Length: 282
Ligand code: PLP
Image (cartoon, rainbow, N blue to C red; front, side, top):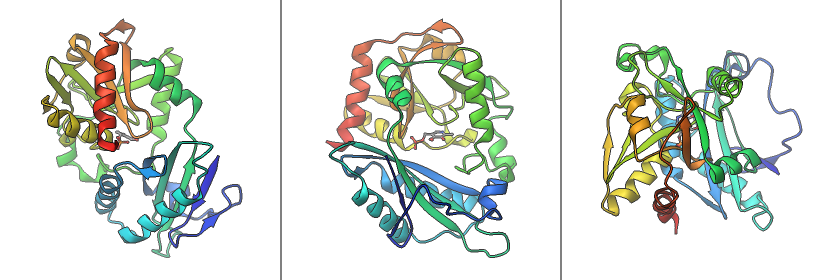
């Protein structure tokens, strides 16, 4: 199932051609996006997603349409989705720099069903390989032109890393920085449990500030957990009481092994974290 919505709140045919070949998003990956989970008609973390879209635009020196336009687009996609048949939609909102020379951004939102493979990963957990990202953790400050921490359309490297994971018989990737500290997945954040604490990597390392990790930590703090945002190594993942990958579409997915070594995967703790995340929306 797919729905395609535009900024003026109209719908378009997702199977019909919509883009020009000279759109900078197409031939340079010059644009930004967000993927929002909508459950039973309710978008999750819409404010933080739109905040992050605006932040990515600032890092890219792009002027993007105002927030009300994005809200109208999201509402149109939500209205068009057949909620009786499918309770979840992954809504990818995209804004490119537009056709070369025009300075008019191109924008759309494509809603799709959650892939079966993602549902399996949510239910069964994942095996992970660590892969080098080739960046130093302090590079973001030094080299803003690298666009670290912007959610740009240039995801070819992230997708190549996922293919490398499959070559190594793993489901997912965790990127590590040049000093060996943990960064993020190609489309997820890493969360560890250590006793009564939850840990994640600081956004200052150039990773994306996760809306799902943010929602999980918000609920965890309210429930009395300590939350820590600090650098940690692969050894800390291996020694943790649990490791998860968090993202809008995969939710809080349990990691079962890292580079072939099993990690602790207590089903009760996994259920607790899943319930904490869901408590934001009940
Ligand atoms: N890090 C990267 C590189 C991502 O692409 C994503 C989402 O796709 C995330 C982290 C997780 O972010 P969120 O929880 O907001 O979906």
